[in-house]
Structures are given as structure tokens and as C-alpha cells.
Image (cartoon, rainbow, N blue to C red; front, side, top):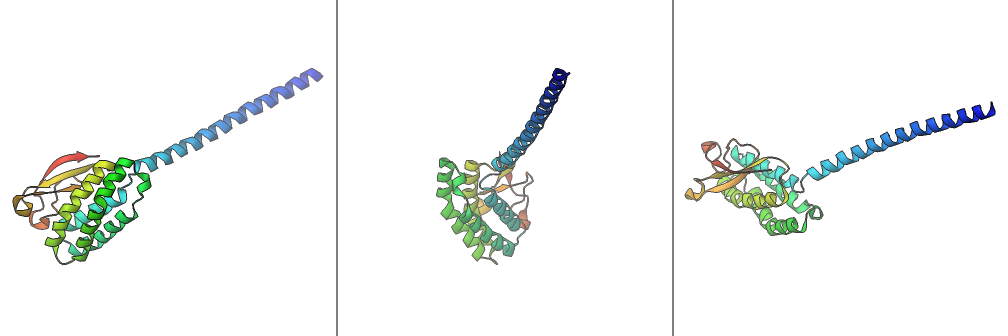
Length: 188
């Protein structure tokens, strides 16, 4: 009888230990999965996402001929460039960022300082768009973007911009010729 009770006790302890191990493993797997999801969310958020977000809002303000909103957003955009965490970039991406940063801030500052002068804001937006395009090409967009071209801007020299929509909404001519342009490239 002693052996039977001892065996029963050992079986009970082993059974409890096995069940407990399974629970620990499930908890560990659950934590690991949550950690992976959090890591994937961090990885999927592109380093230049704040810059891109401000740029797209600026483009939309110019599309709607809203010079005051464009000026306010341009200030945010300059701040996003200044606040960019360069440690999140690879050496190649860091080089591209360094190459475009000063010019992009200068153009954003000019747009910010020129509320009431859409023509001047759009002149600076043209170069700013090229700087942001280079940055997005290097770091990735984290979303679908459309690199769009207006052939008529600047006395038919043309100009490009990034858009979050495939539908053309021209920031260079605004409401006067909102659909002038064509998509040249799709970016992700």
C-alpha cells in the first residue's frame, strides 16, 4: 500500500509539473508573440514617417490653395527634420538624410515664412519635394505613395511631388488645375 501511495503521489506531482510546464510555455509563447508583434510594429514604422506625414499634409494644403495652413505645416515639417532620430538609419540612409536635411529645412522655412504668397511657397515646395522623394527612396515609405509629375508647372519645365493617392491633385496649380499631372512611379 505504501508503494501504491508513493507511486500515486509521484504520478500526481509529475502530472502537475507537466501541466505547469505547458502553462509556462503558453505564457512564454504568448509573451513572445506579443513581443514579436510590438517589434514588427516598430520595424514597420519607417524612420522618416513624421517627415512624410507633415510633407503630405503640406502638399494637401497647397492643393487646396491654403497658404496659411501650408505655412503652419511647413513649420512642423522643419521641426520633424530637426527631430529625426538618425540613429534609426543605416549608414547609407543617414548619408541621404544628411544630404537633404539642410536644404529641406531651408525650403520648409521659406514656405512657413511666406503665408499669403502661394507662388513663392510652391517654388520652394518643388525643391522640397525632390528632397523628400530622395529620403523616401532611401528609407522606405511604409505606405503606398505615388510620385506624380506636372508637365506644365514652371513654364512647362515641370515639377514632381509625392502623393498618398493615385488620383492627381496638383499642389502647383491648386484648385485652378487640380487634375494636371500623371503618376510616374509607385513607391512603398
